[in-house]
Image (tube, rainbow, N blue to C red):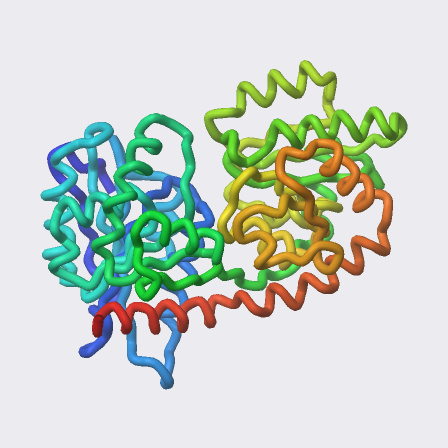
Length: 399
């Protein structure tokens, strides 16, 4: 599709037939250029909505996203490939006032019953534009990031924006408590963790090929981190923990794979060099398909300072990788220390190093953790996620 001019937005009709008569029309606003955890959850809802169901009324879903320049990125390509209708609201730059009429036009065309926002910018735009008076608005709070000044400003707006939503959904009880301090009434708040869909095993030959391409020796322990390279994800502490592990065990020739990109990448590469980690660390950049990386890894590590319901944690558990994570946000609501994961305090480099050494050096411990993690995965199915959100949407319609 050709790029839409900056003064217009692109519109794609319902891929096959319009939603069934009487279907609940849901419009999901997603701010994503890649398959972030939020984007994956929205697509899982769309997939579940597309399945024939006899016990729930039908749901039709369309997606709205934002783009500058040519509207083409990994998220848009996947939505189009799977056949879901999408409106791409173009913007000329940050805080483009033309976004408001374009968003209103998209809502006018789709006539949704439910507006489902998934980030602070979308929360703000829906309330500022008055669209919360045209459809039942459900704001999904996934947590805050502080990657740049625009995000920090939208975070401040979020003290006002979601108060207009009929329901505010968030991913963990810790975030629900924070929302109450921001003036959201308890009766409007619902907690819904993220879903995970079981995947087919990665073929052994694909894992062997990846091992060769990355220069990972046979039998060499592999640590894996997946996520945005921004300060709150704790990659600096992870690199410090790797240096500490090498000091404690000089003969331990392990490899740390970091999949993801973000504003801190150059700083982290400089830190890795300063810690003399050499080729023990590989920065892989953004990876559209991380399944082979999970299959290669012995231990998945999540060193975040703050988290909600991290999709990568569930992905690692589903893939059968032992988990070492920080006990922040919603992580302890998913993982239990010494039962299905090893949990440590955030920013505690020695504790993180010790937990990683335990996991790497104790195969029976890893087997115990991954075996118990399977029970966690079974509690986070896309089907249950879909049912719970449909129930919340119904509440919003009748509120």
